[in-house]
Amino acid sequence: MSDLRELYQEQILDHNKQPRNFRPIAEPTARAEGHNRSCGDQLTVYLKLDNDVIQDISFEGKGCAISKASASMMTAALKGKTVQEAEAIFETFHEMVAGEEELEETELEQLGKLAAFSGVREYPSRVKCASLAWHTLHAALDSPEAIEAPVSTE
Ligand code: ZN
Image 1 (cartoon, rainbow, N blue to C red):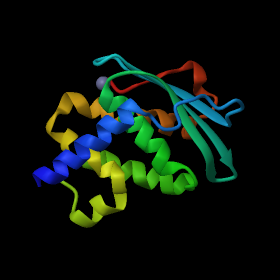
Image 2: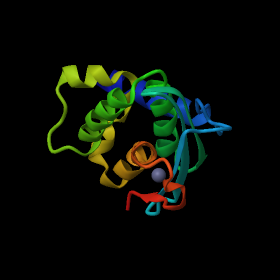
Image 3: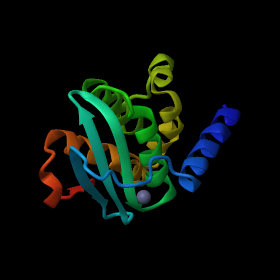
Image 4: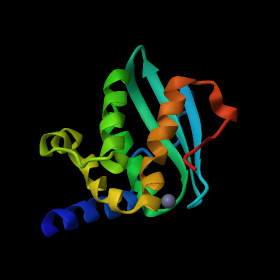
């Protein structure tokens, strides 16, 4: 188990240091801003949808290592997925970090690299950091025009 933890930690550090898809999208079909005031994390998530498929997804912003790595891994995991698939992954992810029970092994496997955040559930103040990008994505999908109304995980 400690090997797994180390691997998870390495992945988070790696994505924090070299965030993937860390750039704006010139003509996004959806965009949303998210704030986590308890930590100071601020993110903008950009989306380019082709019908129901996430053709491109990216983010910008500043925040702690967890929030940045989570946004980075989210964009890497969701590119090419349909909106429905993305929502399903979000639900599983949310259950992993904030659900009442720990996920089954098979559910964790479905999350792939995102399982790196499974340890976050032991640190309630970090749950908001890890889920900020996802809530922001959710807002962008829900209401693409809601650019003026930032999401808050507080
Ligand atoms: Zn944070």
